[in-house]
Amino acid sequence: MAAVVNTGSKFLKPQSGVIGIAYVRTNNYSTDDRVYNLASLKRGTGGRSSFNGIVATVFGATGFMGRYVCNRLGKIGSQLILPYRGDNYEPFRLKLVGDLGQVYFHPYHLRDEESIMKCIKYSNVVVNLVGRDWETKNFKFDDVHVEGARRLARLAKKAGVERFIHLSALNASEAPEEAGILKGGSKYLASKARGELAVLEEFPEATIFRPSDVYGQEDRFVRYYAHAWRRQGQYFPLWHKGERTVKQPVAVSDVATGIINAIKDPDTAGQIYQAVGPKRYLLSELVDYFYRIMRKDDEWGYTRYDMRWDPLFQLRVTLTEKLSVNWPIGNLHWEKIEREHLTDDVKPDIPTLEDLGVNLTTVEQQMPWEFKPWTFGIYRGQDPDEPQAPASHPKVFA
Ligand SMILES: NC(=O)c1ccc[n+]([C@@H]2O[C@H](COP(=O)([O-])OP(=O)(O)OC[C@H]3O[C@@H](n4cnc5c(N)ncnc54)[C@H](OP(=O)(O)O)[C@@H]3O)[C@@H](O)[C@H]2O)c1
Image (cartoon, rainbow, N blue to C red):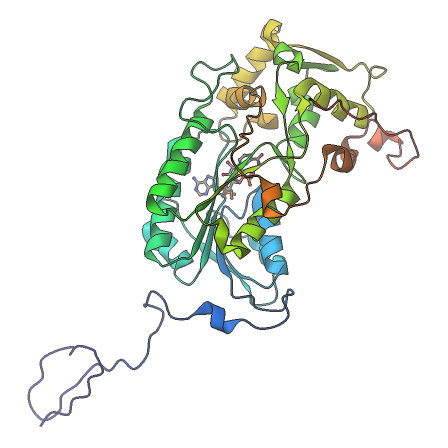
């Protein structure tokens, strides 16, 4: 006689004889795609030790913006799943962004769908911060910005994720403007434009951010201009002396606030936002201002000149690109030079961070603090806190 208990499951094996064995499933466990209505688990008053109903997977959390976005998410009581590649010590400092037991790490590979699925199956929000400023042996721009982004969006849709936030770039276009340096313009910007289309094909309600140059601690803007490799001694080369390029840099904390505001507001689904700062400046004005802040002024010998007539500097860029392929010294490579000299094209019909309620930080408020570690003579007795007339502000481009 066979005793059989079956609650919607299947037999392991057809049984005969006295004892029959049945496989009994009484509950849903981790192999199921969706187990909870996360909103029903909200607890607390909205601070770090609350749970606000957001379980967010942040791809690219180990990068510059990742730190800020994760910190903001943790601060409002979100649970975080932080996928990483390579050394597992690399992402662990992010453990502190959230309350105890609220930050989880999981290894993944951008081409491995199974590992990606494991990272997103319990989340209702996915943020894609994965990007690279230069191509490597293993990953070309399209692999990261188009195929990688498409894969994340497709799997997020499949897993039932509610919000997908994707980081693109300002000036992204399939046929980008040319600064006159790289023939055909920036491949990075072209791939970012294709990436937006790929994401929207897979996840039409995705929210896309297009940041201009983002500055903050450990960025690739302040550090790029302060780096000795970017200049020739006291001489600073810029294409056309930087007098034909208009920039609108944005503070990283403002971009992070915009991303959090978008996650919290369901009306932002399917929208594109331009993440730009509040003011526009000529590149030449900005760089002159940065060097005034660092007290590397005319007296120090600061001189800005036209990069077009300096073959030695151009050779340096080429050699840096060829010899330090995976991590160009000082972030110096031709792609960067091309994008650096492209005017920020802010479209009036596309909303910006201000439409997300962000109170924008100005360059004049933030840069004196950002450039402090590069104050001239700081390690040779000069006190950066010694009272001194503040550097005169850059002229705003009308
Ligand atoms: N910072 C800016 O000024 C700026 C401006 C416009 C747009 N954006 C875009 O905004 C996003 C975030 O920028 P960010 O400054 O935070 O970038 P970032 O500092 O370069 O960080 C990029 C992140 O992407 C990951 N990543 C890169 N290639 C990968 C690959 N092949 N597989 C898996 N992970 C990979 C990196 O992981 P590892 O740490 O393991 O390398 C890192 O976590 C990017 O998409 C970027 O293109 C940035």
